[in-house]
Image (cartoon, rainbow, N blue to C red):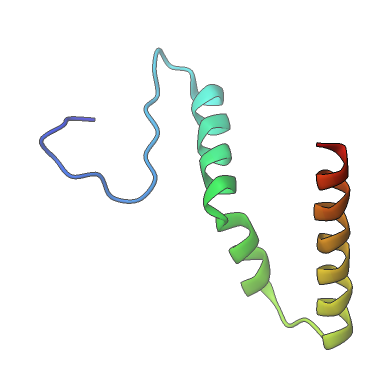
Length: 69
């Protein structure tokens, strides 16, 4: 990528024909940006009980992560 052009969105540089490594980096960046979660939320309709269940499990995961660290 040349420095005189502005960067737009997520970019990954493929070095030495290492496509698998570039895909790994791209997936990590997408995960950090929350793109996977947003796609999952937009995928379909969730009922109130499903939203509540998912929020409860996410809170439990955060709490357990906090206990470990």
